[in-house]
Length: 186
Image (tube, rainbow, N blue to C red):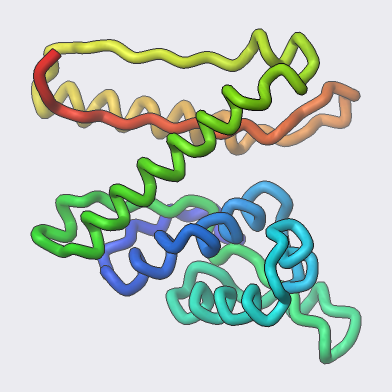
């Protein structure tokens, strides 16, 4: 997987990554690394054929690629993300209904993960329940301020994403972080 950032500016690629199951597959490859369609099917409760179809769509969009070096034989097909980070901005798709739908799907996805956490947090050990957080605030910012905020948040996320597990015996779990800026009236 490349460490580069891919900025999506093609609505066909945006449509490919916005599909809920394909987004989930991308997340699994991000967190768990390369996998076969069978492995992904087991993690998503989907048929292997369905996963294979969606992996081909993601490959056509150059979001995933085959990892033949992991295959034990010619029948085994491994997949990995083509890039670590994918970004897109609605402003790059003015008036495009695909981008509008993608924004709504993204917000729905983020909200669903937060709701699932709220519904299940009592099943986690106490230290994990106490470490999750939520925050929101109103600020008066200029466009330059907003761009700086965005860049600083992205740098911080990159720093945490690139941390490797040092083998120190500390438990690490997948953590979903979402940040969204919306303009409006308080």
